[in-house]
Image (cartoon, each protein chain N blue to C red):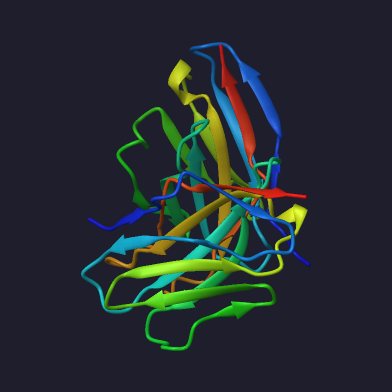
Length: 115
Length: 116
């Protein structure tokens, strides 16, 4: 069964460093998302992406964050200058099309720790 | 703004018994989808079940079923014949569809413990 994959599974970085989290969505999916979950808290929407542009972003997704689909398969989330409060689990998700009934399938997550 | 509330931070159930996890939501839309996701200790988010708001029939997936009460804006998850592998965090989620948005809004989750 096709699945969303994410790399790395864990990443430790120093505050102020740039990190890139990578995701490979399910191959026929066209809509991509990033969510994050701070330890012990609920999952929060960051950004949605379609047709090579952001379709929606939350207030969390400030200028330090960016997304791109560089090669038609990978979908990346870049944090330009990490802060301690960026420590969280980051989930990538994808769906086939923009429709109410379409399910978003999640990857296994990347656990980011900022020191 | 749409909100999802899970009023039970923790629940426990004996193996083979039945447990119900509650979820309420607030929305002004008439057409939407609701989901239950399971998050085991590995922290991967796994879809358990989904419900279309326009369908009156409650969704079922094997041992998992929902009680969808649209007027009350309630969406509870029933797990029958609970198994040790059901132990996890369970998140209720609502699909927002404003202006083409597809974001999911999640509740805070319910931690389910299954006792042998």
